[in-house]
Image (cartoon, rainbow, N blue to C red):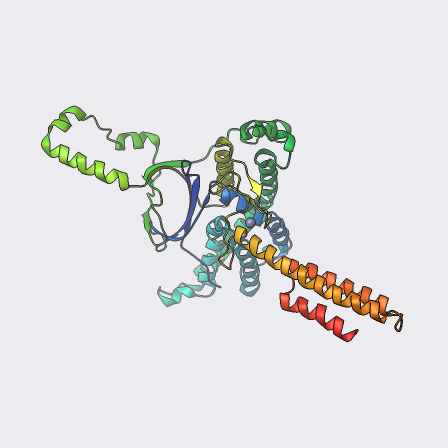
Length: 424
Ligand SMILES: [Zn+2]
């Protein structure tokens, strides 16, 4: 099994002015390195990452938490039982992978799981991986390392099981909050009420802790709109910067602007800046660092906060039924998700409607033929009525299936036509 000893860093970058947000995943260039490379980036309307996370995890996260619980007895395994431990970890990895595939936020935090970090070292000693490039380790020391790292792995698993349970409940309650505070269709009588007021109602009625005293680390930026396209590197500061230190670092300008402009040299420099600034896409941005499972809470609460403060209403897409935050127009009725075939819901809806019209037309034509046949045969063949009814039942069912994309147009035709011939 492949385990990762490089960390990932997720950054949720929120641009309030343009109603956009970016989610970037950075991967550490090498173990313990301060350099990170952007490996993936998604750009959406404000709050869409939150809505997608809720939608994609609402059923899955509870199921995963449940499955995780189902294998508790493996935890009592002895550290020497490498085979069993490995199969257990493979099972957890499969669960994590399933969740990571649903959403970019899961993908970035799950790859930092302490479970796999500790297991990496357990495996390192169990399989004597060190022999590849290090000096051999004495047997007693090797056993000691294995025991130690399996203990850490086991403890992390227990912590994560509890955390998953909590997050599963949190996802459900966050979904309720979104519906109550941001979706006009849930309670049409509250339609005119601003999301801030609705949030206050939500807090008072359902959850006293909701949006109350949440502290989170947010970084402010004044920079270009998208400073981290995939491939761009980032160097992290290992020491935490306190506001006090930040204050000393910032040498605020105390220069006299008037004197500066009198100076001919400075004037030219200033002119150059003036010309450049027009072409520069500068924006105010807020960035949240997402590294651990707990940070998912931060990302959700912060996104929710920005949606509420900007009074953004969400609605369900007319085609796919997923919640979306309007990308351009506030009265948009389709989401902007790009599906695997590269198409968006607006386009797909039109296509599907046309196809549905074609299907209905085909069914009606066949119905006419069958009905005429029945009328003709009724005198000679008393069973014609029954045969026709049965055909119609099958054809109608196929029509529904075809409309729902459960069967292809060709398959639909085959069902409709084959029956009409065989019963003629
Ligand atoms: Zn949609």
